[in-house]
Amino acid sequence: MPELPEVETTRQGIRPFLEGQRLRRIVVREPRLRWPVSPELLTLADVPVLAVRRRAKYLLLDVPDGQLLMHLGMSGSVRHVAEPATPGKHDHLDLELMQGGLLRYTDPRRFGALLWNPTPDRHPLLDVLGPEPLDAAFDADYLAAKARGRKQAIKTLIMDNHVVVGVGNIYAQESLFLAGIHPSRPAGRISAARLAVLVAAIRKVLADAIAAGGTTLRDFSRADGKPGYFQQELNVYGRGGEPCVQCGAPLTVTRHGQRSTVYCGRCQR
Image (tube, rainbow, N blue to C red; front, side, top):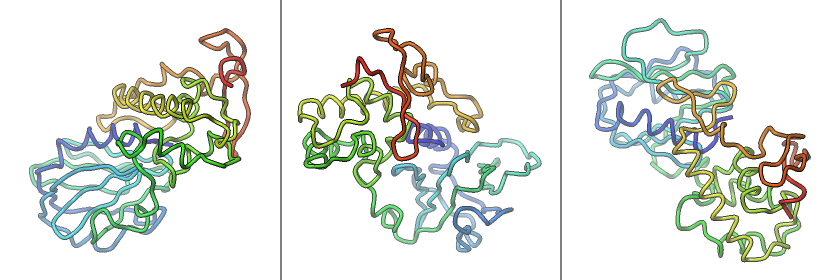
């Protein structure tokens, strides 16, 4: 599933083609995504795209009088198509541009979404989200307050979008390894000092992944069709049974909330 770095990489890739340009129209070939494509989008014609932003895993395209809210789901992607090309089976939407070319939304599993939001930045899907992990609001004091008194595993806590957005399974494992914290440790039993280290680790892992263009897993690739490269730098994710890059001990595999978790029993306490 595309996580925050993949969505941010997509935003950076499509922004030059959309921001400050005019959207000619939206062509919908398959409206049955996770939620039906908003019918209001079919009436948009010759409108300027004021900004291309991101909130959690949602892409936000600001236009006069509202906002297009896009989610890539489990396998979706958005790519710029410069020349006319016959759409494939899973190419469900085109955002045609007045200057030529289009942005094509592809989603084999149809778990993504394209919705019309008449109240920019205020939507039931956005209102319940926690702070962005790279924003100042997500700091050691904030995480300590959220962890206080909780028996919940720290990995599960930092993957909760109500607590902080965008720390998915890949990056939660990598951040906990970097911070030296066992993923099963109860959140309320971790000191404020160690939580400060974890916040810094989350920031570093996500920033490095964005700089590397995201992690290429299954169907994900960048907006230009090229793969991301952060997968080459993964320390624990997907490496169960292999030697730890720090101590050489075999990495252990367990589960949290039905998600596989890999960690080092020596380096993470």
